[in-house]
Amino acid sequence: MTRSKFSVLWLIAAIAALVAVPASASAKPTITLSGSTSVAPLATLWAQQYVKSCKGCVKFKLLQGGSDVGIADVSRGRVTIGMSSRDPKPSDPGGIEFNRVAKDAICLATNKANPVANFDQNAVQSIFGGGVRSWSQVPGSKQSGTIDLFVRTPASGTQDAFQKIFMGDTKVFSGASQKASNGLVQQSIQRDKAGIGYVSEAFTDGLSVASYKGVPCTLRNAKSGQYGGVRSFYFVTRGKATGAAAKWIRWTRNNPAALRIAAREWVPFK
Figure 1 (cartoon, helix red, strand yellow):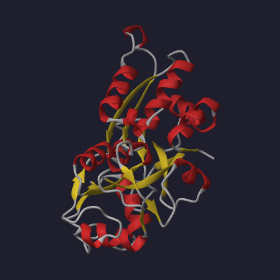
Figure 2 (cartoon, rainbow, N blue to C red):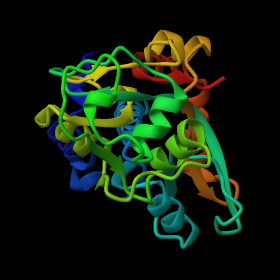
Figure 3 (cartoon, rainbow, N blue to C red):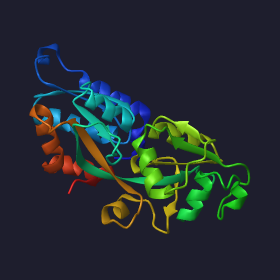
């Protein structure tokens, strides 16, 4: 499987195929999900395999919107599961449970016309914090003009994880262009020779991916723990998961087929 399969068009098509079930199956339980655009590709693959393996025992409806949206939706009973790519916060609604299902690497990426081999934490904080605004100030850059920053919206779990892991107390530059999904950040960098941003490892097709602190952002390094930019994926439920949702979450964590799916582009649950 190539990363190009995680394009926006592919994901929409996959979801459409997933929910296109016969009318005769209407009485079967439906698991609804919303939230993280990072978790959505993995959740889609899992749902497709689960429907196939259990012979259509359940239906799925998957929406996106960002981690904060998924957490808010599940806390209000709008969906069965909220997808989150960030850790729990003290400000999260009460009565919800974060069920870790996998891990994922956040990669720093530039346009292929401007491959930068490595960024240390100081460089990341200087660039994304707005202290460095010209590529001429960045060692290894092939560009010399203004740096175009592409970041995620505040509702994004990827944004939250990036802030925590890479930025620390340094705030992201207010003039950065905010995008609502990994796919939109990916597309923006692909089209802009002066662009830089961060995306889930599954969305790096067509980009130049930099090392962080001398360690390449690869699936192997994420699995070994060598790469420092790794965060958790969660299925968030309203209280303890029950019924069809509980069965599916157990399946994603323990079934060999589910673990093989996760191992393609992510770090399986353990």
